Length: 473
Ligand SMILES: Nc1ncnc2c1ncn2[C@@H]1O[C@H](COP(=O)(O)OP(=O)(O)OP(=O)(O)O)[C@@H](O)[C@H]1O
Ligand SMILES: [Mg+2]
Image 1 (cartoon, rainbow, N blue to C red):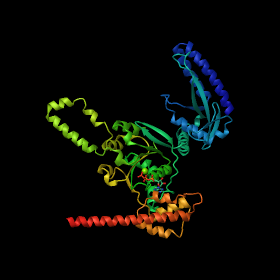
Image 2: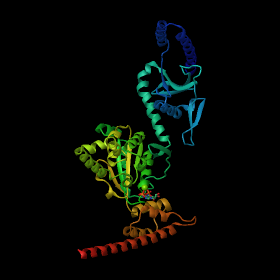
Image 3: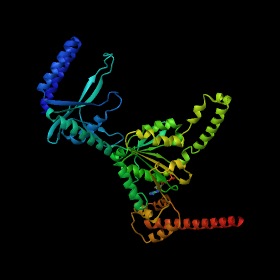
Image 4: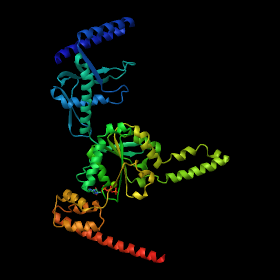
């Protein structure tokens, strides 16, 4: 079949050449007639249908998504048949990707129906200046199948190929960590090793979190049905060193999402912020760390003052006249909380695809109520001081220990002191190459005893201050 198609291909190429000559030298009407009859003739003798998928879309800038999906599908399903393959490395990756080479043909089968894929190129010259234009290589895939299977192939097979290709692309892609520099994102490969397995947190809380994330990632139809954008907001709060950033990495690893670490202080104004958010891709987590520090939370108060001033100006026509021209600049000079929230709730939701948005803070109480009101951030997650359960996760990670005679002492001490998982992790980290688990645990016990004493002293002082304040009253 392949050979037959190959011969047919050469005949077609010859015909095309003759046709090009005709186009140049024959009058328009005659050309149209010949075109019509040649197509009819083709239909009669040639029982196959061909579908062509070019590498680049009409705008020539964006690589055709369908082409990419087909390329991936063919590399993993049928490339073994091809005798000539193209080898390339995946972007930023060491692994080798094999795709079928130009003018190579492979066969595929779908529900008992055979079909053929060929990869080809055409050299197109710049038509306006044929002598000066650079030859422009256009690559495309051509699918050939018998016309009696038209419905099966165009409806079911093609969507099967796209689905498969896209799924493989998602599985094998290198994930990225984006950071913003003004209104531009730049990225590095995201390679954080944190997982929910290594995250020190109560098992029940962890399970709930994983379920929430996984069901979100699978809920495309649900979100479409209820008419809500496929987005979910998390607010992670807790003291420094309790694992907020670590949890974000674990979330990204669990769902295989990219991470956009949005530094709001580097964003000039709400317009720039919108630009950045629109550029984010689907399957990503947008992170704003320390939201209380990076946002102009006084925005509202400032605005109020501005409004009062504006009212005064309204009353005073001379002042109003003087202000004309610069009134707009003041309003957009900074990213404001309302700018951020309006965009997240509003227009940005129209961007296709799933996205998580995560805010972190050390001070829940400092946050503007507008930010934490229910329905805005879907989930509030507290990461707190190290519990015994969390400690056990760390002991397993760092020391490969499930039990030890010091565990009971540690459990008691953890209940009476406030240390973060980061502090605990520091003591479990082997300091020398000969350090053993016993030494690490002993150093942790010492640290916990000190923390307990400090906590007791602090509590005493606070009680003293309180009683003296009461006496003064
Ligand atoms: N819950 C945890 N599980 C595992 N490791 C943790 C946890 N919390 C902290 N750590 C360890 O402590 C280090 C610091 O934690 P992390 O950066 O996640 O804290 P954070 O809550 O983001 O702090 P900050 O508020 O200062 O940003 C991590 O690199 C990790 O090794
Ligand atoms: Mg952090």
